[in-house]
Image (cartoon, rainbow, N blue to C red; front, side, top):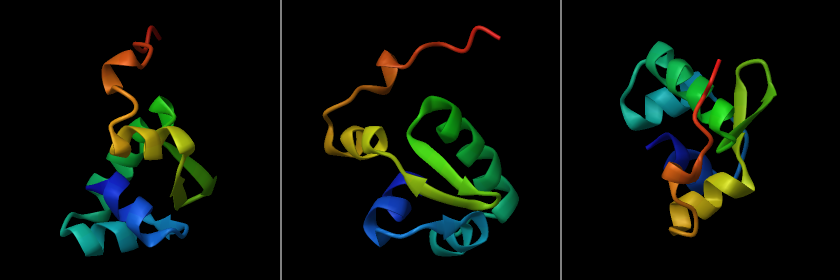
Length: 74
């Protein structure tokens, strides 16, 4: 839902705005955004503001499989 919200808006959004629009808490959205940034599907523009990446758009279009992401070895 987060990727869809970022993609459909076409603009940079805050975690609070995303949460409000997908009926989730800001805290829940912030935690998930952190994972999406790590995976390269979302980029952090500045603290608290995010936009979808080209890879995130490819994922939504079905051109990229999330299973192809490198596992976090840290």
